[in-house]
Length: 504
Image (cartoon, rainbow, N blue to C red; front, side, top):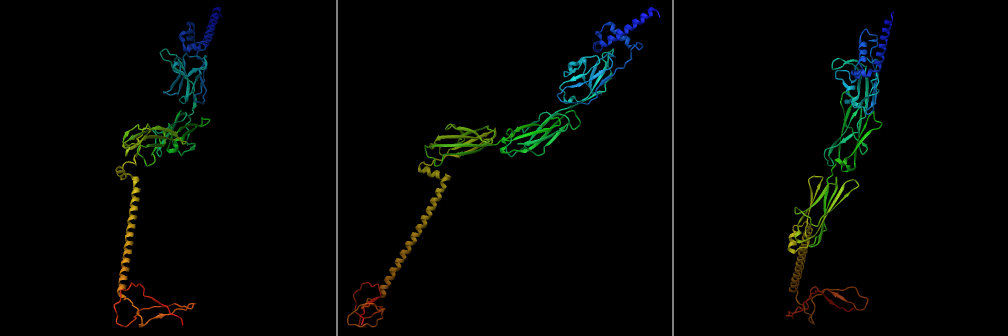
């Protein structure tokens, strides 16, 4: 072989070695910015691309990826590995999510500003691994590392794709959020509360409702979407009846998920959704209310919630500042409030029969009223009589007066009847005496006349020598001789005579 031939082969081998060595050192520059290479490098590339040139097509390019799956929690950083076995053909490397026509571009060197969460892991000739920070549930899927070949036209053509890497994002649910009725409800009303959470994966999730740490009945829970997805959301609704004592009650939504080390909870106070209306009552100065006295009227609004309550005084339907009413707000142990307002003023005759009204407005609701009518007790007799006919409290006095009048009438009738009986008895006795005088004649006892008959009854002898014997003279005629007119005798009221008989 001639020296020229040897020199030519040596020169050719030297050129190939130079091209091969330089190609390895400038592969990244070739793929990203081939126009910046020197002219002799372009010549080397042209020679290497020729089918008959030594090394052309001697090594096929392969794109290598880890199949996965790779599981990680949302918020963590994902690393996707990709390496190639050769640096040719010239052209960029790109990452895609999905393989069909609807695949999503994840990263391209010339468009890096569009993917702020994606960066290269290493800058090397054959390593095109990427890093995705702050992984989200929607980042789950299959990622492909694709080699493109630089074309003479404006766009590159896909040369070869890797097998793809499956990524599973295990997402924790967001903290639960509880919402209630849009406006306050009164005790006894049935209201619903809704608990929501989103962005979790896998789909299975458990929801519990608690009222003052006591578990409520089953709730209506829905997880969307119904089909397979990379991220899910949950909505749970529970119904309950409010009570006056719920001012201090609490409602809790508790969720459990496989990604959570412990359950997540959200607690709301039922007081934010409850309105307890006030109970109004009036208290006045004890009766009787005297003229020119100081009277005090107190209005109490009890057991209401929230404390957005105002009390206003009205006199005969018109607002009044009489006595400068003073209000006092207090809170009870159960959380409800009481409000007291007092009205104090001097009683004048013009205030008689005036109506004082306490008006309470609570939480922008319609007003509630309570009224009292002032009655003065020591007016003139005419006024007092006219007022007593309208005063309900005088009804008792009227009943007493009627009862006394009835008793007096009964006693009067009894007295008249008694007097009548006494009078009748006296008249009867008087008539009897007159009849007795007419039926009896005077008895005249004369000497030396014999008695026609006599009936003498002798009783038991006494212990002494002298005895008294009583005789009952039914009728005594002392003489049968012609009767002489006798002098008018004295009135005799007894028909009995006593005769003393000497014991023999």
